[in-house]
Length: 260
Image (tube, rainbow, N blue to C red):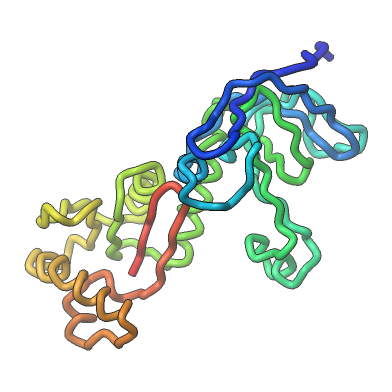
């Protein structure tokens, strides 16, 4: 194995509006640890909000970055599932694997869940269970999109999106664009919203009348306002808003994909 450097460059978050380029020691993998040389790390809205102090999720100093991928450069003696040289994506969350929620395949509800951040550095040490090998032929940098894509996949599953269905995508960031791609692959047809004040894109069945779309766009805000106030939607609002078939909603870091 090629010898590793003893120190690395990293972007250290020191506080509000304080991010510094520093040198830190390269972590040494032990037990079931895997050492990754980071190839790419996305900048999530969570990172920006931590930097500007708008959300108190972690305390500085800390190396941020959780949308990451890279290559395995060293492994601990107990690692069995990945080998040195493998291109991998990283799951930035580690659950206990034993509680009720973990057994019900809901690891994100685990009370003992730990966040694996630190992608804004040259090297990253993570537990073996958070490392996933990329398929052959996939550029290693593409693995950094796995974490935001998982948010969109989860939202799509909860929405029950089907071919010919209708979905409103609010926002055109990474999450919004991934949502748009999944909606397209689900068989929906592309239609642009006629309202200039409405953000995002509207997907609908090609069989739905245009007047229904226009009426729905005008009705959505008032219907959602009534829901926020705690009152029930009227049957008329349900009929006129094509996206009101399912009232589920999913929010993701870095943007919002909503299915109402």
